Structure formats: structure tokens, C-alpha cells
Amino acid sequence: MKTIWFLTAISTLLFGVVSVGAQDYTIARTGLAAQKKVLLLKEEKGKNDIILFETTLRVNTDGSPLSYHPQDPRGKTRALNNVCNAVAVRKAGSEENLCFSNFGEAIGVFEKWRDSGYRTVPPGYSITWKNVLSAVTENGLSVPCVFRTGPYEGYFGSLTALKNDLPGDRGECQIDDQVNPLTVPALVLIGGRNAVKDFGAKVGDLLVAYNPQTRTVVSAIIGDTGPADNLGEGSVYLNMKLLGRTRPPTNRAETREFSIADTKILVAVFPASRPFEIEGNRPYSAENIDRRVRNWQKRAGFASTDKFIETMKSFQANLD
Image (cartoon, rainbow, N blue to C red; front, side, top):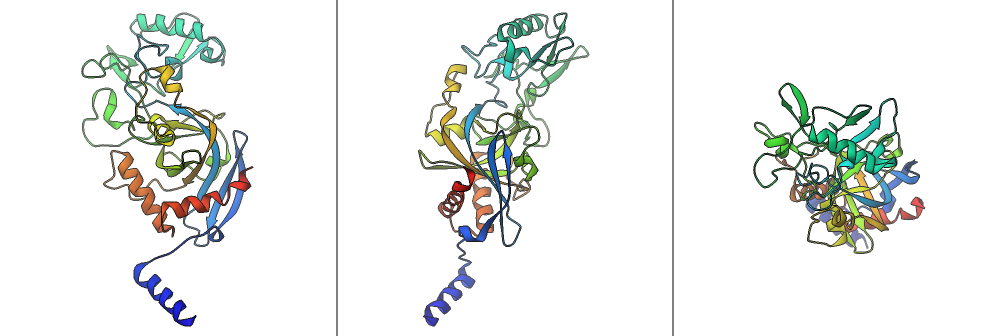
């Protein structure tokens, strides 16, 4: 027995083989986000916290130049999304967003604003759009940027909270600075006051998403921010991978089919991981995000992604 222990110890010292188990992590705090339980897991070193929760996933298209088209505000033919996911339309003196309470009226107001060249909002209304649509200055007025050339001609430029931060020219409508939801696995950070944010999650942090139905594990990143009532929203690419699909959507109806509503996805966020190995790994891609996630897991002592998921699953009973 002593010989076996000695050889194991030598092997660990020489090859750095460390196997982390559930016993190495403990539940430090619990909280809620959109009425769902959230755990903050800590390990003995205290350097590799994990935020764990289960959620269904809506689908997010922001950042894709195919998201919104001024001539297809309902997303029926060319746009992946309806324009009400990019703008908020309100009556004067009211905080109510007509996109949620009267979709038809909101679209009508948008179309009149569009037809004015984005210069005049119909009297009695206001339109908020700069959080999602890229802006450009024309004749001294800030208006939504519409691609004038190339494969995305006619579409709005769409923004993400996370940027590639590339030097120099970032392309028409800042296209090269956005984290494209059609090619990058990303999660939307829930807005408002909630446990996920209280436990340290921020835009740019790394994460792992696991679908128990398909047994698929996807490395991802927090790429955008969203409303306070929605804990789960993944980029088109993240949901595609979790569902095992290969063909991206082409309109709003197809986009909705990528929502994951009947399965709870296990999500493990690594708070404060945005700076981890970020140098040389931008623009963000599925490949460099996966590489960083796997290296973070190794740093935390997990011998493999399977070991990591096994440990996370051991805490699932505490999420009920």
C-alpha cells in the first residue's frame, strides 16, 4: 500500500495530474435570479469560484447583421428577429413599451419613423434604439446604421455588449467589433438585481453549458445583457450546439425554433474570468473560447471536461 501511494504521489508531482471532486467545492452562498435558484461554489484555494444554475434558454440574435431589417420589421422573410427586440416604442409620458402591450401599434410607429429617414418620430411617441442598433451620423443627426454594400446590404447594424476591441477600422456599422451570435456561443447576462450578478458574473466571463438530453457540453462566454425577468437566453450558435443542429435560421419563425423550452440547461459561469488568457484570443470565436475554458478548468484542477460536468451535476439536487 505504501508503494502504491508513493508512486501515485510521484506521478502527481511529475505530470501535474489532479482530479477535482465535489468534495473540493462547497456551496458558499445561494440566491435567486428570475425566481430560479443560483449557487456560488467555492473551492479550498478560493481562486476558482463557479456560479451554477439551471434554466431554459430563449434565443438571442443581437450582434448578427442579419438580425433586423427595416423593410421586414416583423421578421417574416429576411430578418432573424422582429424589430421590437431592437427598439422600444412608448407614448409620451408613459414607461410602457408598446412592443409588449400593442405590437401592431409599435410596428406602425416604427414604420413611420423609418419612412421619414429616421428623422422624425410620430408626434406623441418616443423610440429608444441605441442600445441594440448601431448608430451613424448623417447631416448632423444620429440615425441607425444600415449597410449600404456587401452581403448585408439593407440590414441594420446590430450591437452586442461584449466587443472584440480590435484596433483600426471596425467595418461598416461596426460589424467587426460585435460578437456574432451565429458563430460564437454566448449567453445573455440577466439584468436587474439578482444572484448571478451579485455573485460576480459580468459581460466577458467564461462559462460552460450542458444539455442533459443531448449530453452536449458547450464552452461559451457572456456576450450581452438582457432584461431582469429572463435568466436564460443563448446566442443562436450556443443553442444550435446544445440542440445538435447545424443549419442556422433564416427568419424569425425559424429563429424561435432554436429556443430550448422543455429542457433545463445546466450553466456554470466562471466569475472574474474575462481577463483569463484573453491576449491573442480576439476576435472571439468558438475555438478560442473553448480553449480558454478548458485551460481554466485545468487551472482549477479538473482533469477533463467530463470531470468538471460530473462535479457540477453533483450539486444539481441543491438547485431544486
